[in-house]
Image (cartoon, rainbow, N blue to C red):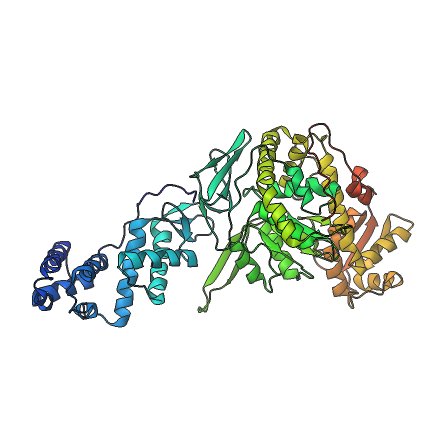
Length: 602
């Protein structure tokens, strides 16, 4: 597996002295080794006072030497002497034995690998040459158990010993290891500026991508770890064909630039990530489309999951997957929408550590989020401003079998992957030459990359920006349609003859809006409810030319807080004014753009 080189720099806790100095321990080791050498012919030596005293001294003062010698004893002792009888000479209880095994496990890990901690999360890691593993993970516990079994000639480590060892190793990582940046799937080298994709082929090689080209490496200059559900990418084909992707995913032609930009941005761990929301009715291939897009960014043995029930579940899933891909989502709670906002920009979740009263466990994370559902999933304005929404059309004509589609994707995957790497190269080369649009949206890095990508494909400047703006405004309009209060304010503003639409208290506004009230649920029952509902809709209303100015500071009236509503002088937003036209208009590429392959229905 493609990994950084190993240098064993943390050989710690190998000799624990509690009453015996190094010279005395060395003398005891010589005694035990002499008994092992002669014990086949003289088994009585194992019952001798000299051996028992030496073995007890080693057991109490040097767990690593005890582990090493115990293996030799097991290999060479006479068959009539049980190993547990020899262990008893060390005067250890069952708990002491587990502790001794834990010490041996610690010695094994520190002798074999390099220990360090991630500078972002402070998680402990061990690099064993072919792979970097998180210390507190099932993968590392399995590795440690396996190697202990072989080194001890068939002895197994108990769960308690493994837990103790991993706890000790985690402490060593954090207090004696050096800080490193450890990546999951996608990484970037700070000095060279190159991007790296981990997990190519069965050997888990690494693709290095710069503006000059891409190549496959056995060893990366940055560290990666592998999650339990991660799967390898196929070997990419040079000069691949992105066009084959559109044969296998149901993305409208006019939205494909947005999806390509989302894929490339998900490979840049140094920038914020927009979420990608795929919506469509039954028969629009939502799940298949989501699964294949996810596989192109972060191949996984479990590509799609149900929506998490809690915010903590969402962050735990994100900690173990590069892409958070949720399928068939019918509703996202406000808490989960806030969580996905945090994930887009490198936020953190803090919760009480299990089995403690006051300790806090903090999960720091930044991840691309991929969602699919029938109805609009993203409704919170903060998340809307960080989301690309794609409406999938119903597929007409003959349906194709799942097995047929999977076989077709696996066959095309290497070419598609190679084409995406080629596109990443040309986009990175174009990026320094591309100006950030003055009207870039909140996800400015994504806007910038999308412009560079579109121009590298032969599109005129601002084509991507217009498309992205149109997509954002469409999303705002959809969210407003789910808010009866926002719709009522828009209707009242349209009917108002003057720029100033309203100036008064929330209680007065609630009465003023009654003629515009719809029959849908969600109408606020109090002025406080109205204030909260309008606060969430301020950005959306501003986009359609309605400005809300809530009173701030101390209340100026005994009747309650006031709010002013007026029409924007800008009216419609120049080239972005006609939302549906900007988002739905088919834009043809200039010479050099990618070629679409008309594959017919799924």
